[in-house]
Image 1: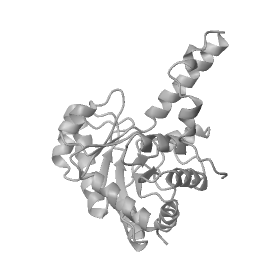
Image 2: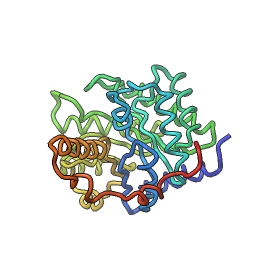
Image 3: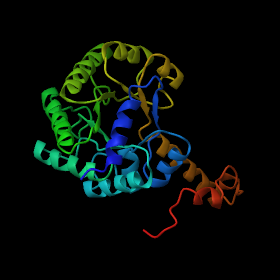
Image 4: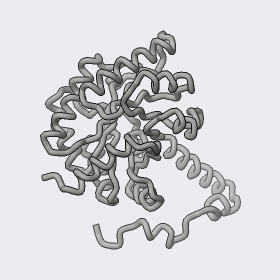
Length: 282
């Protein structure tokens, strides 16, 4: 049985894609990150599969068990009141029957949205457009059968990996896939990659549905993305990597018998952390 609060969160999350204000999703990998975002007024939370996998010591690419992934998503979703969308890579499923089962399990975690990609596990190798559209249709039908408007962010990996195609050819492929994915039931399309301004402008012109852009140090500035009408920006594993670099710098300072400044300054206090933690037993 789907809780009414989950249905309402799904409707809220979908509405955020239609707002004049660009939806910002600083991807997290644990409950405390989700609670910090909620505390700061972010209206929703997104996970990053690469960050979750790396935090457990595994490479991205469905290397951790789906049950492990679901457990973390469930912990995140149950820790906050705002909508959670989960990156489930390509769905951890080799066929439509398995995908349907996995979507049901994902919905049971309390999540109200997903990222699902059209890669097949090997860099640069994409599923046939029709096959991926069938998978998206299966996700939509499964969610509808459960009575929830699961928000589907259909990622296309056209711009990832090495390709002999020109940028204009890649844009054409991305637009073709975007249109088919939306027709199949996706709510938003995600042409992932570090895209230049001209590419983003062309995609915005050719794709009428909501668009998700990847935010990174080399991406089009956020204010510019807002101005040209991009609906949603997520940050993949980049925030996690930044945090990991900070930890690496701290331990290097300790190893060199340096000062305590690397972690002693600009740090949360004990009380700062406590407000994001549950006080009862698990």
